[in-house]
Length: 368
Image (cartoon, rainbow, N blue to C red; front, side, top):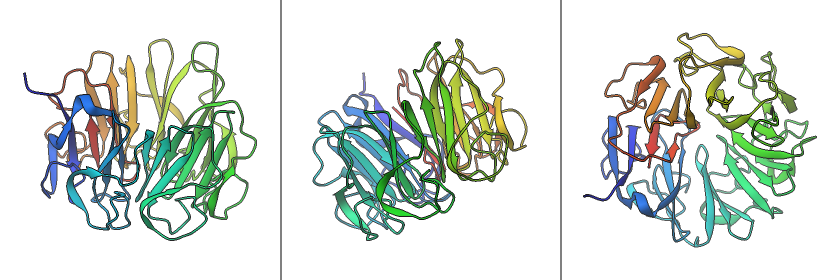
């Protein structure tokens, strides 16, 4: 039996599918070169527009492989040349988690510190400068970090003490410090404690406060809100965290795309979505924006869910992958380029999928 391989589909103009080609796009899954599924511990997808993007894979030996767009050094290989097959991020050997933003990348290290590489025009590398770096640099002043997430031009980190720290672009309040001033070193998000999970969208963020599970948890959000992506019933930007109108409950997963957000909740692991919906990315059968969470109909047993620029994907308990929203580059992976406002089946030819990824500002997907 052939070894299982990491798969990718959708836009490939920057080589972000990692299949050794520069084909415009793939409407069904293609194989990422050189990586067996067994070696891949985590995957992440980045991108800042319909045609660009990059992929990251954390391997069992705690090194990271990268591929795709590299004009800002976001592949971390010491160059600014894009490549369409995986290559190693340099000077990185003890990573435990990865995140990919618009044109920058983050890695959490085993010692609880964070490194970053790529675009830095807004300080999204968090190293006290605004200079791009094609090799990993230390994010200043962060330790005891438990989780990381990357937006289009910002980064956030959840520390072991339940506080959240943010850095980078802040014109919409995405750093949550009450200002709109961008920062090139991390600062704490105001009034946020007891956080157990984080997610970064294009220019907004989500945090889950309190224990996940039936004993209750609350979602908070901050940053850009023009499409209702904070889910607080308004379209006003928020410079400090506000409560999302999903209420308390057994929220098990949160994720965010360029301008929309999702949460998995309830004993049946159903999915709620809110924010921009012009391509049907909320999956409710309409193209109406929603400033409060709405259920994705007939979708239960959701194990994992991710958001791209204008699409959403969910891995179900039966091992199938469903996607919906924009599909102009085949990012739904169902063999067509037709948008869908309700879930369709992604054709991955993979069994035993337990990892999926989509770029916060791009149009492709990955599964392993």
